[in-house]
Length: 184
Image (tube, rainbow, N blue to C red; front, side, top):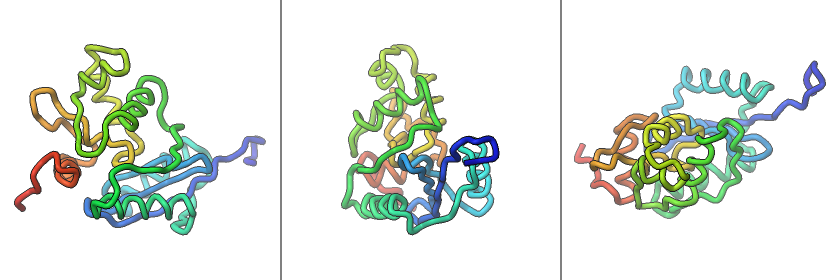
């Protein structure tokens, strides 16, 4: 308990190397809560400050945590082409409302190797015409890769934006066979 008598949320984290650069993984007792791209020291430190502010308590580095170790194992299998979906408990506490609804639909309804348009995804959650709101939900995704916002594209064939950068989005889509591998 903290000094106000509230239960602090224990947050554990680790940085794992991947084909798209280092990812910071963070978890609570409820599940994986955050995946952060390009986890340099500065990016990691800012992410840890945000987690402490949002969830309380000081995040603790613990790569041996069973949940983080399993998430790292599944990510390695994903990047090696051996795994097409993730079977991890997820803690959705960093996102709510419409954004959570959209991300849950994305996680369950857009399988590996497929893409969906922003507008199509809006229609799936009962908000036809809500393509821009879906774009905002993708930008707020606290669990990229695991909740595959890279699979959401523009209806005109463009790949759209991406919090991890367009090069990262292209690499993920190429990994899943949606785009050809980059030449360089």
